[in-house]
View (tube, rainbow, N blue to C red):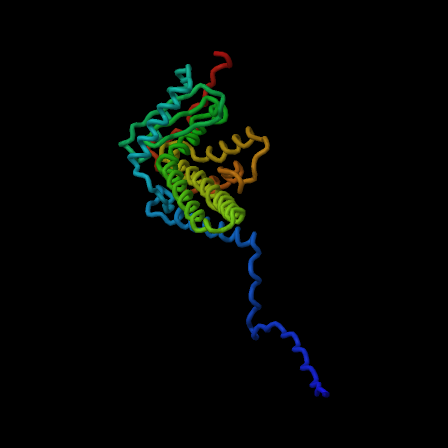
Length: 310
């Protein structure tokens, strides 16, 4: 029997991809897996940034909004404890003149700091380290190694007012609060990604770690340092020290530290050149305060450094 062979139906032509309507752009390509990981990490760090930069407290002088989750009384107690522990481990200076100098400059700054309830204390530590610190509650220490860079009382006032500004602005409490929030966001990311493959989870958490470090934590730290420079400049001017010494100090400090440094965006501190330039810009404001100081000490006395070995 013959079979009537019908012609096979023509094969359908492949459809052309839909074209975007006039005035519209084509849809974005979906992110590749690494892109999705970085996006997830970035979103986590954005949440962290929003929390850190939208707090309910404000810093003195600058008015910057702050995230502070720790009671100030607790900060002060922690500061006192840390101060006592540090002094127990360090050697106090054997030079009475240096201790008297730091006490004198510190007292003048403390009088204008607006915290009369603080139990102010100023110590000099025998060390070649070019450093100083202030802790909540008015606990301040200066290392002998920073004094040659200071040159004079005003240079010392730059250092001490900067450190005191950290304490007044509660930067330590901010860092502790930020650390708490960072941990909470990281735990939340770990929870929402718990059903993903281990490699994918690790990449998301690593992306969050890098994004939060370079996008939030380090810039936040540099912001605090710049703020302490700003507040400190106004403090030293109000205390009667010539604020023009502040940018000069940072230029000297930068010249002393000519070794290899990390790029600024990878550092916890602004570069010395950036600090000096920012302080130059603030001098007109600081000079107005300096002109109203009841007593002007100018640069003060030149710091008489003890001879080596004495």
